[in-house]
Length: 64
Image (cartoon, rainbow, N blue to C red; front, top):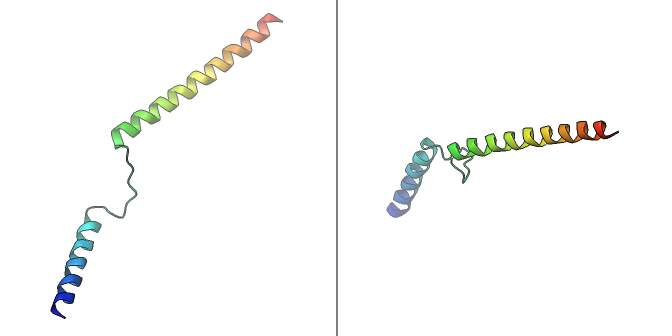
């Protein structure tokens, strides 16, 4: 009985430490700084794509 009580108290202590360390929050494999850089790169890619599409549309209009 003593061992079961010690195991349960150890589990409770570990759970409290896990929760205080932010264990309940969703974590990703990619660090926060690198995720921000990836988001900027995606934004740049989409703006470049839209600029290319706009340029292609104006090129098609000029050829007529």
